[in-house]
Length: 64
Image (cartoon, rainbow, N blue to C red; front, side, top):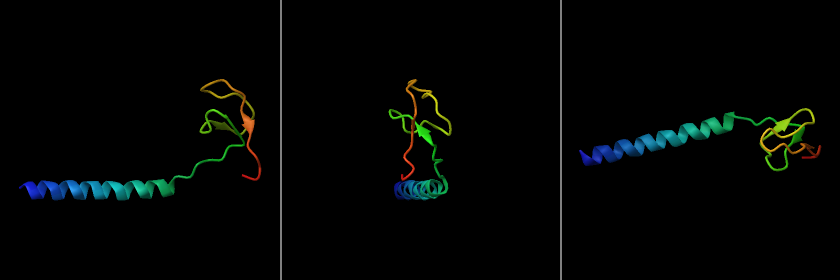
């Protein structure tokens, strides 16, 4: 009984790891033209201010 529970836990963890790696490959981040220096995950296609801290967003370099 104990070995069956261990095997079930191992299989569950293995399947969970496989599904996460598939999701990561399918998700593509959008590259915004403007971003917050303090919060790079916050971006916009137009100039403005960060919704988290209110700092002015800066233009992303074209070569990056």
